[in-house]
Image 1 (cartoon, helix red, strand yellow):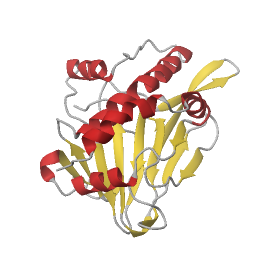
Image 2: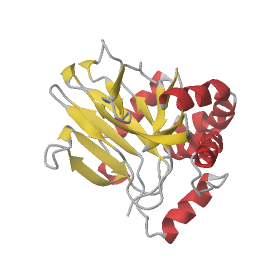
Image 3: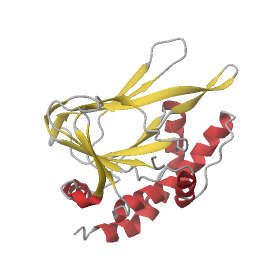
Image 4: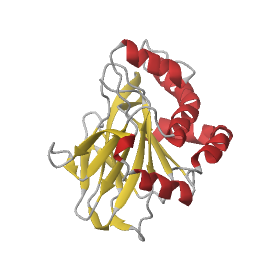
Length: 244
C-alpha cells in the first residue's frame, strides 16, 4: 500500500547523520527547539496523510474536544509502525540521545540514555510502558491544541519531533506551532513558529537546562498549536518513549 516508504527509508539514516548536528544542538541548548528544513519530501508527506484513512494502522483515536485538549483529532499508530515512521524514530534517536545525556549531566540528573532506540524501548517495557506514541494529528478550521507536554510515564525521552505535512498558506492558514518557556520569577516566554511542509521541529519534551549564576537550572517548556483559520492541517509527531 505504501510502496515508496522502503526505498526512502533506506536512505534516511545517512541523511539524518549528515545533518548539521552542532547547529541543532546549539539551538536546543539556547532555545529548547530547532527547525530542520526539508526533511520529508512532498510525496512522503502525501503518503503519510493518506495513512490517516487506514484505521488498521492505529491503536487509538483521540477526539481532542472531548478531553478538553483543544479541537481536532489525532491517531496513535499501533505496532508494527509503518517502516518510514519506524526509521525516523530509530535514526533521529542516537544524535539526540547524545545531546540528552549532556543535558542530564549539566543538571546533575542521574539518567543515562542508551545509544540505540531499541534499548530505550526495552526500558519502557520494564516500566509497563507498552503502547507506541508516534501519531498523526488533523485540524480543520477552528482547530487548535492547548499547551501541554507528552510524558506518558516514568520513562520519557527529553526530545520529540513534529513534522508539518501540509503547506501553510496553501493547504491551511493559521496553525502556528507554539512553544512557551517558564522563566523563574518572570513571565513565560513564547515562541511562535510556522514550519513549511516537510520541515522538522525538534523540541524539548519537558524542560531545558539554562545556565544561571549558581549553575544550571530547569526551564519548563510546553507546546501547542494555534487556531486554524482555514483549510486542513496535518502533522506527524515522533515521540521516542512509549506510553502506559
